[in-house]
Length: 151
Ligand code: MN
Image (cartoon, rainbow, N blue to C red):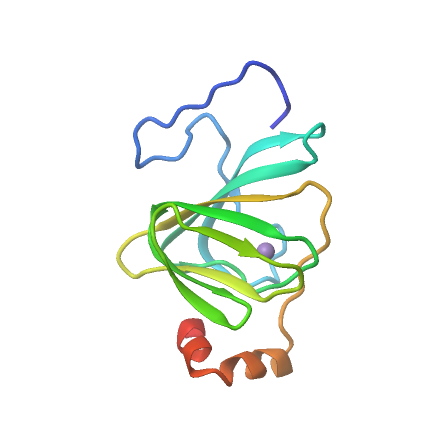
């Protein structure tokens, strides 16, 4: 979205995404596994040097399990679900705040019955996400809680 002022984007109701903001594919990288996630770039202004995105994970869907040097600041604004951050699995409820530190494995999963929608603030310039190798995935699955989370 180009920075043009003033700009107001209003959802049609509390359950809908901002219809005037384009809904994008979650990732351009077809090699990164995920399921049923959309992405909207809500704020993207070079003078801020950050982006605020909205991700919506459909019921039963999940984001990519990944890590990277840049951090995420996340706020749940719709539905519920769970996330993995490092070695911990968290149950997510409305308005929970989650910080994803540098080089920390993370993934967001919606529950089976409802979507999970969250805001995510991120640097404009950022490193490319890394995916776990087979060895790293096996190390994560050594934890029963993480193995259950990963499915
Ligand atoms: Mn990430």
